[in-house]
Image (cartoon, rainbow, N blue to C red; front, side, top):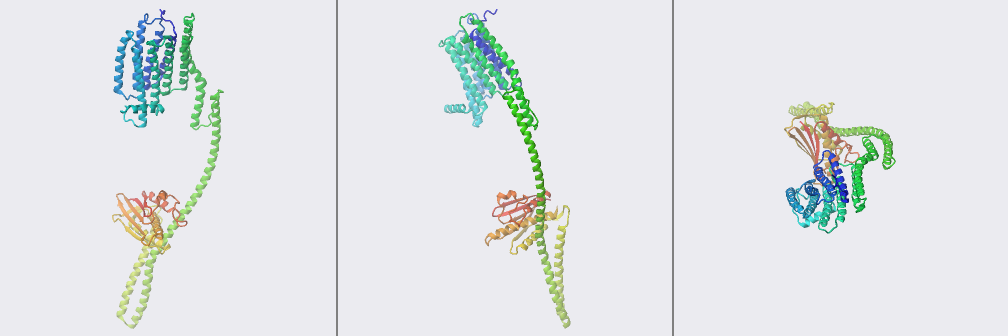
Length: 637
């Protein structure tokens, strides 16, 4: 029944090729959730596995051209399917920028191969030339796709297809990909292109043998060796560029299997003794070695590697993950005395050092925290003192303004009182002399003076009552306040307070109050304090510029109130030197000041910012260096 089955060196090589393809096919079958690329690769590898099985049976026949006509045709048909299966893989692997071309090429190749099979039946070696052309075209397509992938990364491709280009451009693009592939896709396409170059060389060897340029025995050795090398290369490309992750065991087992089957597959040609009586025994032994080697490598190697290599590595990896999670007490068992054992031992030393450093750092952090808390406590005390100093400075400026405001009506009261006293003495004299007309005139003048005394006394009384009202503790309670009157009052108070320190200071005060604005709910003492700070800063800015400016410079401070929907805006603008842009972001920071030492604490604007924020508003600044500065307070209605 099996009298046709006679082992030859070519059949031993074909068995190695079949076992390699079979193991690769079974491995891909085991992958769950295979990507579309892997599905394509699986179809191609399955076709190649079936072909190498048929090739093994084909080469095991003593006379396949006469006694094995069915096997001969089966071999030819499977070879045709195998060669045509490369085209869908070439076009659709990763992406297909040549949709219409791929359909036309596949249908054309199918028709041409079908026609060539008729000539194959007539024993005209036309088919092998077609397969060589298909391989050449596959190489070109892979190169073009590598160029497209490169162009996509560079951003020069506007679509998935290659833009029209000259031959010079194509050659330059090819050498660009060849020199430095830009991404994983271009590297994969380039690797498959080189693999197809090797397949193209295999078909050159086949056609040279068919044409009689190479003896069949030499061809057999070269042909099967190149096929085994091409399969090993294909396995390497897949492991490197598959979307699915691969393990170290897969790479080690795969490369070991490829190397051993490559050696055993070629050994049949090296050890075949021609017509020796031991020829069948040697080839049978090699065939059994191929099968046994495959089973040992595929079944025993993974168990060995997992036990002696991956398990210690997993323990180290688990330790790394626990350390990353914050567990520094982990310890990896050292079970082997090789590089992995040394890695585990060094890992344990590292965790011990980390624990020690962690304890030292915790102690150091505790010490530094205690010092920091003490520093914060000291800083709070200093801050409280500075705030108190700022309050006292504001109080001093306010007191000076109040004193000046009260001094004016008191001066009138004193002056009119003195005049009235003199007029009373004169009245007494005129009354004694009996001059009734002069007496009546003096009485009228004294009455006018007393009215003026009463008026200015009431004015002083109003100022005092207003100050008492503003100084009264409200525990942060908001109350309806006329913001226009408040701004006008504190503008005058701060101006007089500034003049109390510098009698030569003069400034133009301009106000533009929006009459639409009525009373709003605020804490008047707090908002008054903000205004006092901003007015004082404005006066300081224009005074500084006036010291250095020409006589034509006229200091001016403009106060404007505006009603905008649900907010009230208070603009305080001065024509001083403005605020430099480099410090604009710092002006609301505590303790930051541009005033000379002793002129300010750096808390005025910071406290003003906090007060406005507490009222639900905001304070901003607009400035142009050397021209003006304008602070804008926005308060909700």
